[in-house]
Image (tube, rainbow, N blue to C red; front, top):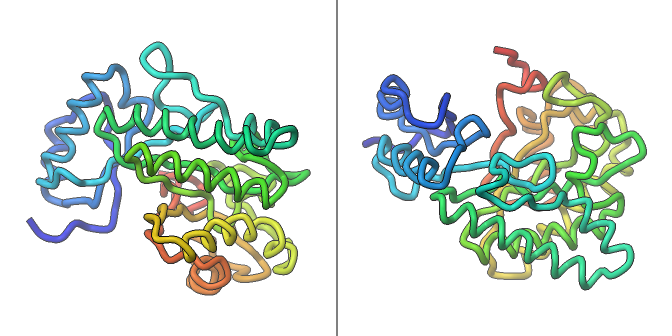
Length: 274
């Protein structure tokens, strides 16, 4: 089979349809992503992840899921633990930073082990966005804190926990969703915050995480871009599609050198609503 194409596909239900199997065999995507509609039981998901990889002939094809904890969880009780949202650990950090770091890492490890047992190799977490006074509720308690240092510290612990569990983490939504006041699932956010303020807050959390990996030999996490226009950098094009944002901010100022993926292209902020 030819080299995989740079795309990640989903499927409609809890098992592969014949037309999906044929399509995946023809197109050979890099990997796949599971949503709540694809997840019922342990054995069903194990079979689905096996079948997806079989269509492309790659037992290591990445299979992704959004299992952050809190309200963003594709795997739910009774088969899986109801993990707390990131904001819980941020509140804990205000009283006991060491305990919060330990709990964040342990929680990520537990999530990672659940995913690993299902054949899911990549988790779209942690959220490294910084909360602001006007941050849209779509982020809310999915983020750790309104302090960039706390966000970076806890996000790094989550990344370590996922890695220790054998799961690849994706930090999101780089270079930062916290300044957006609308939901990018529904509308394209335009952030007019100055470059200086972005660099001191939203970008800083991601930068600190990336600085750690520059000093260590640990495996880099992946990162997921934000469908947001940052007027101070590129007043026209969302970060996902902006060479200016990717090259000068994500790769440059923040210093992320790892595998970069887009947020979902069915979101209306991506310019597609089909």
